[in-house]
Length: 467
Ligand code: UDX
Image 1 (cartoon, rainbow, N blue to C red):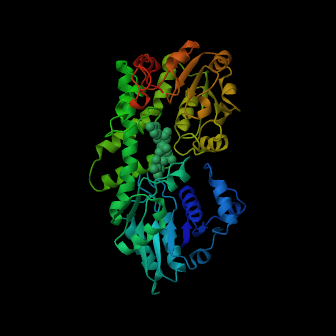
Image 2 (image 1 turned 135 degrees about the horizontal axis):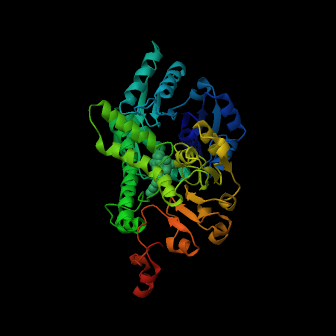
Image 3 (image 1 turned 45 degrees about the vertical axis):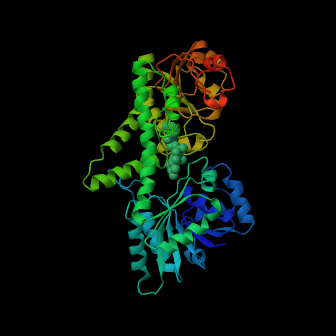
């Protein structure tokens, strides 16, 4: 088992450190914010992630997981140093802000007194491995300490990060020193995942290209959704039909209000910026970003096409977080939608199962007029006297709402289903004016997959495509 230091107790750092400790390693997580470390020592986490709190507690209790603000304490006897600090968008053009990575590299150099492997987990511009090497080398001054740098990007999704860490599709390792990459690979051996060993630049690019590709899939299906709506097809069934093609795959073909969160928006911007800087004009990436932005606008367009004006109307917003099972509000579509609705004279009643506080903070920070926003205790309270309801985040509890009850308390029965959660005929049966995303057709029966083929053809035809 190894002695590991993880720099940064944000999302990636905390999940990585805790999971590595859970595999039996001795891990010290370091952060420069004293308050964060004090709270972590008391078992209070800065983020919400299912299962993480229990895992932290278990490993702290077993003596494998520690928290500190001291680099000298964290680096003592340590063989692997993971840099997992954030790299926010740093300028208007979308370039990544590397300040935190640089200062982590400086601090490593100041305290390191033995050979260690420095592993970059943060999503960093292509070429950053060289930057880390240079900063450490410069700050070691004349001390004779050797080190290696390896790039090991993360592919963790919020809400299922522990599972993603424990069951990775692949481990990517980039280095100019194969021996160092080999040592890092041993850390992950028990996960039995394919290991892609490559050079630093390529590893860094794999991360950007992966996120950009997934974002492209989302913008692609959102564009198809617009066409479906106009031509009378249902994008949900189009996605099912496309998804069976193994070359395409069903994942990330859910049309909706577009992507948000801490990764996709930032990484697509950063990749486009790198390409721009290199003298290219990455047309596809720019189109992906434009479509994603327009997707949020659709809610306002749909609302005004039904209500004529938002002035004086009450709009109910179901869900604030950028996706379910997280309280993360970073680049959440809810922020833009609530901002635009209130700017057009509406008042907003909102509810999110866990992102109430983070939602309030994010809306305030983004300059939304908070006198026009109310936070409710459940979806039924949101619906009271509302002129329209908008589903912004597809929380599970919204799937089984009592629509009759919702309909009864609303002023106008308008439902904008921004995540295509509902069966439109069912909602319309309750007397709602329903608008999904890309759902032009009345649902038609469709064929079920072969594994369900023990049913008669007659039965399968009745059931329809939305299993
Ligand atoms: C993502 C990547 O999946 C992960 O590998 C990377 O390391 C970090 O970024 P995350 O941001 O947690 O993870 O969320 P993810 O579940 O991938 O969803 C991203 C966004 O895309 C969400 O806003 C989601 O609502 C949206 N989305 C996803 C769609 O609109 N349609 C889809 O079909 C899938």
